[in-house]
Amino acid sequence: EEAEALHRRALEARKRTLGEEHPDTLTSVNNLAAVLYGRGRLEEAEALHRRALEARERTLGEEHPSTLTSMNNLAAVLRGRGRLEETENLFRR
Image 1 (cartoon, rainbow, N blue to C red):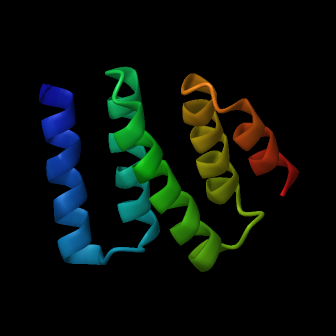
Image 2: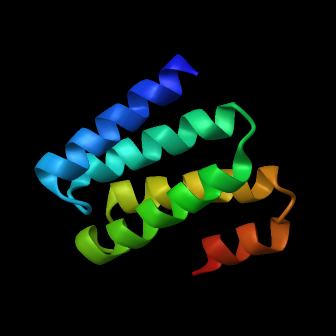
């Protein structure tokens, strides 16, 4: 609970000061998603990982290491939700 609250505060501060798609803001999105994943809140984690992946693809490109990290993180959530075909398709893009 405390970790989630801290990550939410960091995300809001970064959005306010750096903007929605700044790489540091997207790192905060990823970090919050990881906390939610760890707490078993997979639907919320998936939405945040999708958000980070889409923004990183737009701003950094499809083959940037941070984009690939986001792809891997989303795949882990999808696998955790039993959506194996979607996980495979993500990696085949």
